[in-house]
Length: 297
Image 1 (cartoon, rainbow, N blue to C red):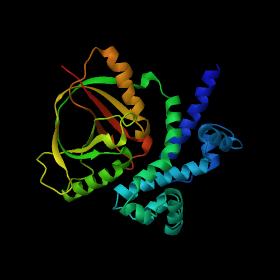
Image 2 (image 1 turned 180 degrees about the vertical axis):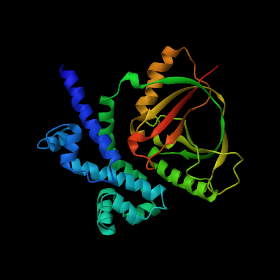
Image 3 (image 1 turned 30 degrees about the vertical axis):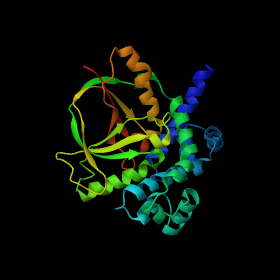
Image 4 (image 1 turned 45 degrees about the vertical axis):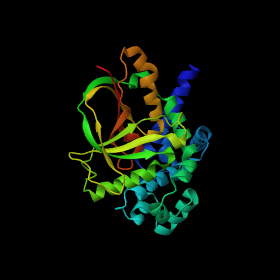
């Protein structure tokens, strides 16, 4: 009975995190969020702080600034003032002060040259809190593995090599190459070739490819973008819904539980992701990533 009550308690806060992610553009006050959790407004703030080790409104501010960071770095067509207003700030000046205080750079500095290593360090504790909460709500029933015949795809690839905290810099370069080659953000099909586990690989040896499906060979360029093929073949496919922050748990399920009991054997090609819906175009909890594990036969 105690375990059941704990699970119910944690699920209430999972609903709150979901609601915050979905309503970042709206007024997120204590009364509304306590109603989402179905808890008393007189105790809710202390309950939230006790569980996540951060105050409710500090958490909301950091989540808004996280989305703002991605918009500044990867959506340069959005004006800084529009990002400020959608992040709950009344003007450019208040947004700049808050961003500088929390991120360590001004919005303009971050847009021009983001310091991703420092950014990741600042957001690590928030990431840890969310992972802990996600784990508490996991159950095996949500994992539905399908055996599929992946049709294969020619891809243009930017090879990220080195510290995974700096992938953002590689993504920026790849987006710039995509724009110069008139690859529409609305129509592009994004993949990642995932060679290594960041939890067990030395940062300087980490390998991760950022890819987009193309119909012709990549022209010679100064960005280092090259051609590769994701071959046709049998794969185990598992859909991950939600933030990248807990995708390691989904991948682990494939290798730890599904693969040993499947009777299947991996093919000589790395794990790869198909990013169906990505942040910041969609709220983090609505992200969809199809994980493919290539199989023999």
